[in-house]
Length: 170
Image: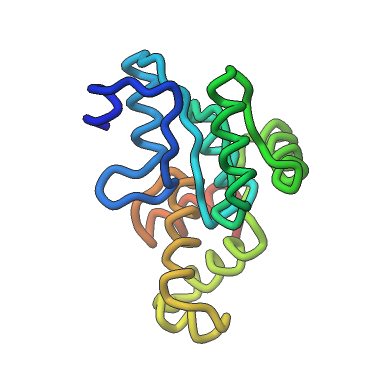
């Protein structure tokens, strides 16, 4: 963020997940400070909730880490021209996410997040969830973090209580 504030590039290419201050937080700061910098976020996660959050925060675009080098360069150039960038393979999921969020104010949880929420409510630990779903512990932690963000909570008990109150689980 300090480098962006000092150099004011036309486009800042940021990883969605960064240590300490993540790409979404940096984007939020850029927007809050009204810096003349457009942000293009890059992530290994391309589920609709991640893309929605990136764009909602103020990013000008989003691109997958799996994108070819030319696609990333094209996205940066498009952002520098004032365009918004969402790859076609991500756009369909984003449209669905927007419609889901518009229909009602309950968070749009992915099927995997719903599955993990039910397992948390059943009292399973994260390592137990990872083993049961045949996922890596880091992957489960990422899903749990997204779940917490969508529910607006910071721990397991609050996630379960909020989910019950919103009738996401019984």
